Image (cartoon, rainbow, N blue to C red; front, side, top):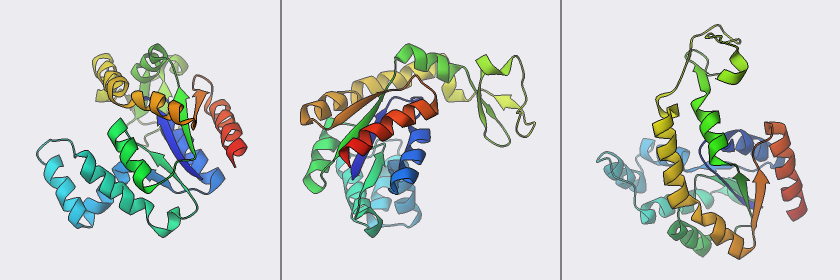
Length: 209
């Protein structure tokens, strides 16, 4: 089963990706991880990607697709995979179709105003990385897990969050329409608890299996 996971920043893709990969025994393929692996191994395509990154430029679709195609050809993907972070654009989706068939696209659908509140209210422990929301902290500034200091990540301020959501809306959201036309997308409400959202995802994937 070949699955793509879509969702705006803060929609909970990371949490759900881990659960999906575990339940269905699928390798979780993150483009960030693939890039790092190729760059660290100094592969030919990794060196090429790094040349763009070092200049502060976006890696071209052609290079990104080559890296993803190589990863999906590995043995652990023979029985399926979960793609997270790719495709990001329509051209990438069209290129993906040339070398792989997608069985299902899970889109975690969530209102942007809800995401603004979720991300801007997030606080993270400097020591262990545990994440909290100000609405549940009751004024506390230390981590309940290890006692470390809680802080707001730089990319969780309102201006940056709005910018990230605009980029998503302009670049990635059109994929929802693209995969809707293909008849393979399932929209899952993302406002519930992680457990509630996962239950909806399981229902969708079990129906396909």
